[in-house]
Image 1 (tube, one colour):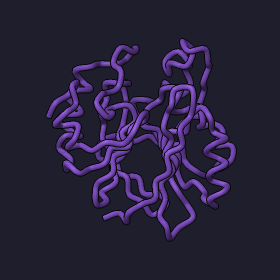
Image 2 (cartoon, one colour):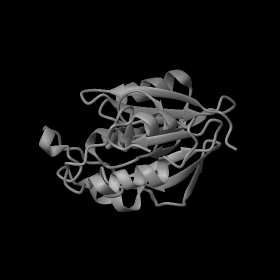
Image 3 (spheres, helix red, strand yellow):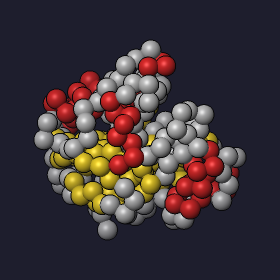
Length: 215
């Protein structure tokens, strides 16, 4: 079982996107998940904390979750950029990654590694299991740490009282709901969900109360 990690949430405006820095207390390397539109906030925290990214993980390729990839790769070129295998086209296309419609043109460096369901990422002394949960975007993945309790870095799949939008090009609401029920709702009720926007929640709470996808 992965040791209990430290987790810092850094919120990037204007979409209040959550970037997560995850690390073990006995190490100075870390994992950065979904670097957003204000990468200087992430870099400042890393510098102040003496942390060095061992990997940069993207749950999906929408602009607000990949906008900081370039700055992180520039600062830490040896940290591999990792994303779901079916999500790579979004990295280089501002229309596919939904940044162009909002007035940005976000282009990310290419992925150094792609993952799909069943893969495991071992970085910074942490072991992330990969789940494919498409529907918000075509190749969305979720990263699961088998700590006690389990910790789920879910991107824009499941929120407190809501789910990821499925009115974007490439979205599919039925596929999203199916993935939540079959992949996330089968995790322990006390599993903590660290979403791409908004506060943390638990699997059990969402199974009982989520109006969009009930358990």
